[in-house]
Image 1 (tube, one colour):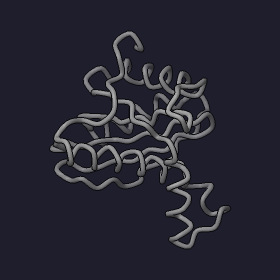
Image 2 (tube, rainbow, N blue to C red; image 1 turned 180 degrees about the vertical axis):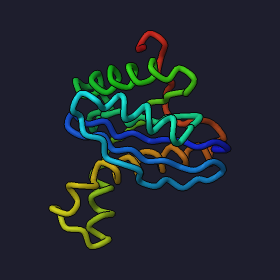
Image 3 (cartoon, rainbow, N blue to C red; image 1 turned 30 degrees about the vertical axis):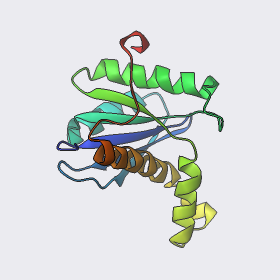
Image 4 (spheres, helix red, strand yellow; image 1 turned 90 degrees about the vertical axis):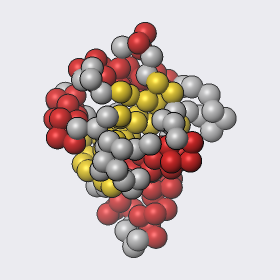
Length: 153
């Protein structure tokens, strides 16, 4: 299904990890860690313009039992603001449970200690989110996750 590029976003309160996949591929790669400092929407819009994705997957933080929480609402509000700023791009919310833990394990397996991980963990989590979505797309032929609803915008 991924004929056009995709972006993956791991939205945190201090940093936002961004990952991408090229058109026609099913492999996610890290792009950037965006600081949350008041200009993050501008920078994310620039990254979207640069990568020209057809679809942006935003990690949806759920509790371990799959319930929505305060963090879920925070991410939906921020993703909605970004989606409203780039109306020609589709946005989908995907379960991000354990993405940071998987990213940390992967980085640790690659020889990065916890101090070295801090600079790139958000990008690695975004890669985990996007790769999982791409794998689900490949398996089902459909976009992963749930569409960001118009009432969320």
